[in-house]
Each structure stands twice: as structure tokens, then as C-alpha cells.
Image 1 (cartoon, rainbow, N blue to C red):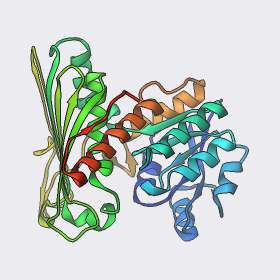
Image 2 (cartoon, rainbow, N blue to C red; image 1 turned 120 degrees about the vertical axis):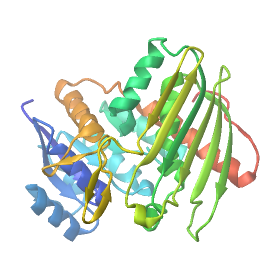
Image 3 (cartoon, rainbow, N blue to C red; image 1 turned 180 degrees about the horizontal axis):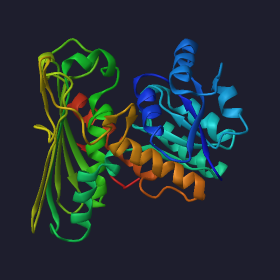
Image 4 (tube, rainbow, N blue to C red; image 1 turned 90 degrees about the vertical axis):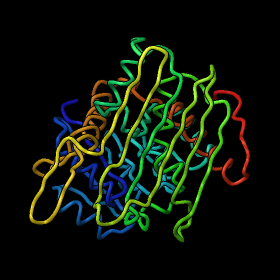
Length: 335
């Protein structure tokens, strides 16, 4: 296979981020795009030099020259494009969270297995250098056994109108839930969630979750959408892992790169998808390049499996249930 040809489904803000990321992936071409808003698909096609803006989901999935479909729709609209792509023998890259119900997750997994096609969920932090280095330190035994983990992932309140459509446990905490499952390689047995509203949104703008892992490790996930607007769009993210032999501390604020200009103070993202000359690099490019390489070599993606992605959704949903019912939730078996 000389070039991996991709069809993009979903041309919104993060769909455009994917297009910026694909620009930096050698041997990969986004050859078609589809969005429920046809004008948005046509604009993306024009801006990124995509040959075809399709009129329907069926049309893009049926294109014979495509090898894979990249699904970047809203969180509630993942199932249909994934199933349609798999039915047309296409491999699928799917943005996190895998789905917002376990039933949808399971249906995707079964369909991918029956079709003999790859389904990779975009848990981007598994491809971010600093988080990967923590994984390597844990895996080598350098930090000993995992005792405690604490993750912070806070965002500006100005983004709530766009991202408040989905519960923060599924929108944000899912990143750190997946990391904790990855680092410990053990199931979560019990969770307790806490949600608060300081605004009038559909879901809590403040959410904390406590995870108890098999073997005794404890994890805390925190996400808050109340950073003041004058602060700009910053990444107030951190992760601490404490083991029996050492500690890993990761902080993204203050950042390692800052610009001070007449327009103010800017802390650009240098890890997830830093932009250079219109191309996104960092973890976003790394995960998209990894997926394309798996398709090119017909090698199932092992960096993140659909079953692992489903486990993260399960924990997130249990946290939501716990917060709503005001009690601990026992999760039970691994799957």
C-alpha cells in the first residue's frame, strides 16, 4: 500500500484538528470528507485540499479507494458512522469517548470483529511523550507498585457552550481514567463521584471522582470548567503518580513555552497538538500516524484496544451514576 487514504466524517472543530494532524503524516491522504452540514464539509475540503466532499454517510463509506474512516462526530453520534464504515470493510479511527453507552461500545466491538477490520479509539494521552514516560517508568518497576494517582484537567468556562453537551466524566475525565487503567493494568472495583454546578449548564461544571483499584491503589480524577476567560485557552492539566519506590509529577501549567507580546501573555500547547506552519504535531500527529501505519502494515493497533476503550467508558458511567445516586458504585468484573 503506497498511500493510506482516509475519509473524514465530522468536519467540526476537532475534525479540523485531525486534518491539521494528517498534514504531518507521511504517506497518508485525506481523500474525502462528510459532515451533516454540507457547507462545512465543502469548506474543509477547500481549505485542506480534499478531493471530494460527500453528500451522505453512505457515499463516503462506500468509496472503494478509501482504506479507513476517521470518525470525529459529536459524542452521541459515534455509533452509526462506525457501523457504516465497518459494514463497508473500512478500518476505523474513532475519537474518544468510544460511546456514551456500554451497549454501543459492545456493538462496535462485535461489528469490528465480525468485519475483520481495525477499530482504534483516540485516547491521545497514550501518545503524549510525558505521559508515555510515566508508563515506561511504571512498567520498568522504577516507581515500584502504584499506590496513588491524582489527575487534574481543568478548562476555561468560555468553552462550556461548546463542550458542555457531554458529561465531564465522559468528555474530560475519560482521559485520566484510561491513563490510570493503563498504568495499573488492574480493574477498578469501586467508584465514588461528586458533581457540582456553579453555572446553568446541562451537566456539572465541577466533577471529582475517586477510583479504587484491585490491589488497593487509589485514583482521583478532577475536571473543572471554570477557568476565567481572561486567562485564555490554557491547559491546566497535571498528573501525579505515587509508587512504593518513587513519584512522578507532571504539570502543564505553567508551560515550558510562553510568549509575552503587546496582545498579552500566551501559553501555547506544546504536547497535544502544537501548531507549526498549519500542521499539528505532538500527540495528535503521533496517534494518527500510528493508526495509518497499522493500516498500511495490516497490523492490529495494540497501543489502545477497543476493549480497553470500553473499560474507560464503563468507569466513567459508573462515576456519573455514583454522583447522581450519592453513593459508592461497585463495578465488579473487569469487562
